[in-house]
Length: 222
Image (tube, helix red, strand yellow):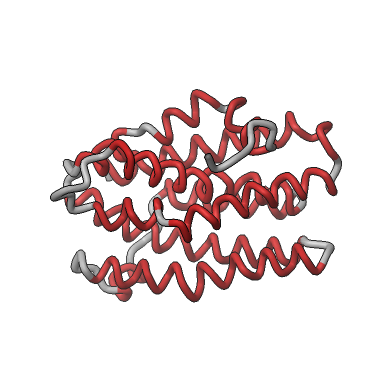
């Protein structure tokens, strides 16, 4: 279990149940799980995910700027470092195995769906505070952990060309990072206004989840 039943994330997830189900059980996810996703759809997704991660690195830099304590600055800096130094390197190596170079990805225009979600996250942080920003990030950070764990347990792994992708997000390392995000949400809620903000945070979470679903659809259809 990634989160306690009384955590902020659990409550946000429950409030956006329909959007969350559509996102985590999307046809793109199911086809990754059973190995039937068309290769061109996965390659399209990989390219856009590279561009997506560039903006998520920016989001963690914004989180550091928006933070008021050294502990929160360090948390945001660790997220930035993980994306810029580790996750991007792994992503580039992974894409090379699919015949996609980093130069190819840099040269590709952003899809509308990529722009919509990444700019929404950045705007949530610019207009709000660091809690708004972390809530907008949560569907991606924690959602991928849930999807990875689900597919590792329910999907077809033997002979599945997408098994490395599934195992990456089901890994102990990624699951630990997702739990840290859940914990940070609770800490920020405690320090940044309490439950009076829940309705607004739930709206942000629901919209970010809907934009994640649209990102899968972009990968599936182009």
